[in-house]
Length: 114
Image (tube, rainbow, N blue to C red; front, side, top):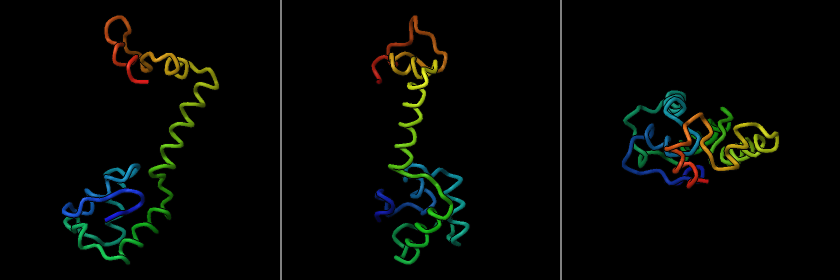
């Protein structure tokens, strides 16, 4: 089943499958299932088109940022730190560890991931 730009596994329960959508965690997945009256063992292949529309409407009603919108917000937050010349932003720009890790021996992986 394809839901909100994400393919959900058919054999999984709906609670676990909803967590595959970027931005929906365990709390939101359980909350959505309780609101719509799904049991936690309800499988994805049992979901009808009407229930699929209900899931989409509820996610929009709860105003949960998901997928491309959430990724865009994360990028803008990082760019804002760089623009403000915040310490974290400058460390990120140089490729150094951001959260206080030591650079003498363990910064090799931080420099690789940019």
